[in-house]
Length: 175
Image (cartoon, rainbow, N blue to C red):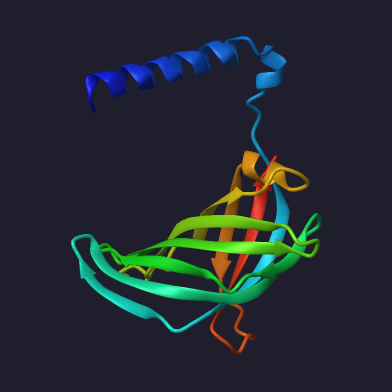
């Protein structure tokens, strides 16, 4: 990092600290957050595209070819124009970075970038940890702009009753 970049970063942190100190303590409440259901989605997947071995590990692309989502405040479809960029790591886990688009039932398009890691069972047979993801939303200004300002956690799993290659992602908003 150059000296100029370090100075810029320090100035930005100082400005943030000054802004936070101007906010009353009651507004900075650091209580433990709870989780509220945002939506449950069923995402349809296309055939994997093997990219090959890279310096970081084995790469593949999983096309996202559609799906649906529904929750208390929003519902709609997953547009057929996304992908999951995966990396198999040497520790038996796969990094997941999915980039896709929601279209709400009232026509608003929202970008989602959802990252996480899926790990294999342990060598001793211990079950793998549950898959948790960190979705980030970019919504246009207006009705859904609140999505761009919150913190979210997702769960990723499979529904054995589904016949096509699909994943189920349930997203929760921290309150």
